[in-house]
Image 1: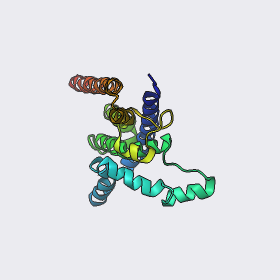
Image 2: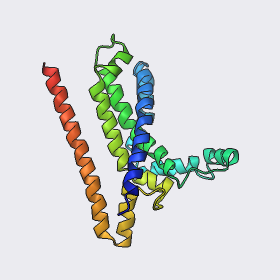
Image 3: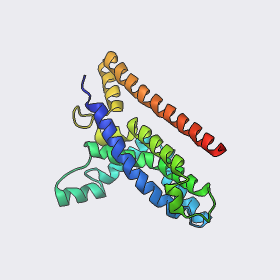
Image 4: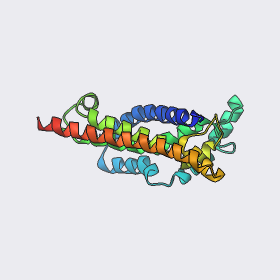
Amino acid sequence: MDWFPLYNSIRIAAIATVITFFFGIFLAYYIAKLPRMLKGVLDCILTLPLVLPPTVIGFFILKSIGKNGSVGKMLMQLFNTKITMTWYASVIAVIIVTFPLMYRTVRSSFEAFDKNLIYAGKTLGLSNTFIFAGIVLSFARGLGEYGATSMVSGYTPGRTATISTTVYQLWREGNDALAYKWVFINVVISFVVLVSLNLLEKKAKNGGHK
């Protein structure tokens, strides 16, 4: 059994989660302090990927970083390289798909406490539970992402294959036995994530009662 899809999925989700973590805190920190109307507009823009179909997100990414896209053309002219159909194109897709989860979680944690507290202090102290939940959710969402990543990276064994794209490819080939194994792995990972979140929530509630 080739374990590259698992490794690649974890690699993509981990890199994307780190980026969304810092970027999410940075934007949430400043946007939380903006006037209500401006904050509402920015919230809608930044959380739009949360409600858009992944294939629509993938379409927009392709139009940007594809060979005919503005970013894609610039990279081809400057570095003679393309981003699409590579594993790091999936990183871009996962960042866009998972960013709203991290952003909304962090922003909510900022607004849940006394506005007189220093925002940075809340990030490092009282809001740790909320932020950790955002990290776990973002990582889990990135690990199982299929729609956008399949459009920008496709499926190439040993190069761009992820758990989700591998399951789809195996289904197309009629290899249900191996597809079930990958589905089982994905379910186990998702189950562990949900248990972790439940334990985290329970710990937070118990801590709040002390």
